[in-house]
Length: 629
Ligand code: SPV
Ligand code: MN
Image 1 (cartoon, helix red, strand yellow):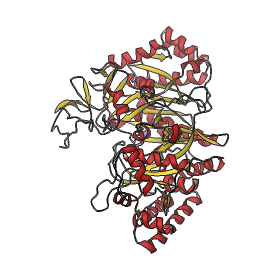
Image 2 (image 1 turned 45 degrees about the horizontal axis):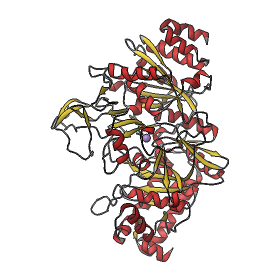
Image 3 (image 1 turned 30 degrees about the horizontal axis):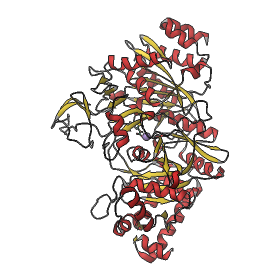
Image 4 (image 1 turned 180 degrees about the vertical axis):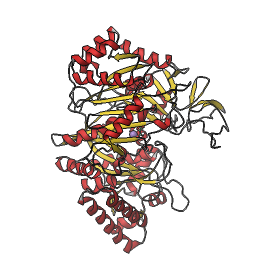
């Protein structure tokens, strides 16, 4: 411990040194000393939980030019480079030691080779800059769920963002409450251009060393690649959860009100940009988490917490009619960081905000005007679709009061959402835990979106919407989910939702964005067995009469039987084709896929074939109701 502190003393101001020396955890000193040795910053700033330190970070984010103030007090904006607008799957790899195994579906590199590469990219990367050290906490404080973590970064924007997104934990570290397997992140923006944007995107690398619980990230600023405690730490948390028998999930958590003020909590996994945050933020419900949840079996009950305390949310389509709660936060004074939006006269603009956009302004490509083209001759949009806002959850009026409850909240239901134009009905309930985990979770097939730096609209399997972050063999991950449920005395119900079903002929979406409010209330009533359902080959689906009532009560609209039949017709051909693709994916990619997976899919296929014989390829829910096959 003294050896590391000794070398650090030479690099630090007395004040910063004292802050660090007050932490009696040698792992902390070692990580900072090694990071400083490698990246060679001019200065090290240790951020405590004090108001002054946090205000200093906010000030430096602006002073350095990484953020710029907007007209509304507390609001700033930040840009990432044109090739740094989403999570980069290709550049993100696990460092796998020789003799260790991860499925080939998970991007990986030999650990020694990867460490050598990332270290060479990080060497001297902070020269002329300050390395900021932040101590934070995943999950509520003083809780069985808590994981202390730290990040060394040379980005004031990143250091500022974590302030809104996580719970401060310098005091926790000072008490010595940090285990040896605490999560560490080392991030450098690398070379910057005159607009303070990472200038060498081709050298972007995000490497996850699960042996030492360290994530390295370089030549990138996009939050999902640089804010270590989002998806980077989720990958480490999944391994920790695997060892300790709990679940770390890509899930939101929301409290849904039922009759007589009853409140039921749901957790929901959705692929990026498929409605997760907007589901968590539905008017009338509370939001407890929008992205990452930890689930534990506590006395036989499934309880969940938010690993985070803020939102790094997609801003596209946020408007005062559909999203009044977040709209209010984004338009009133208070701390908000906008990233990759269009700026004009000190105001942020985004696609789908419900007003006309200016014809010019500043965006992620610099000065922008309507018709501006990129080097390939393609027209540049006013903003990137993955533009985001960063806010603290507590800024929202409907933030759930249990956010910091060390025991979390009891889950009544778990939802798996997908973006599937062709197959799954808008909402359905699984027959049991295994069926839900496999047919809605493991078999989740979805269209790719703008949240990753790849082509949009391709179908892919995305197990439990978390495949990008799974850091253990995929079969093991699914098995852990199956077993987690089997050990519960009280199992949450499992639901599948699909907000993106289209008419097979016209290609039109069959649902309005606001219909999800109705699906949530339907699920809430199902959790308490207040209403019945129709048995379909793919799960329990709503009865028309129940939806008609709910649509009227919640949305004030007449829900027609024609709409119901269109939305809840079981598309047998599409569902069987999906099962075939899913089976092939698992046979080709997941050698240790659990046996139950193939069994549950086979049973689903048989149920589909049986209704196909009687009703053909498109089976109306009305027929199922009459027949109850
Ligand atoms: C996602 O892409 O799933 C996000 C944003 O929630 S990121 O931080 O990029 O992971
Ligand atoms: Mn996410």
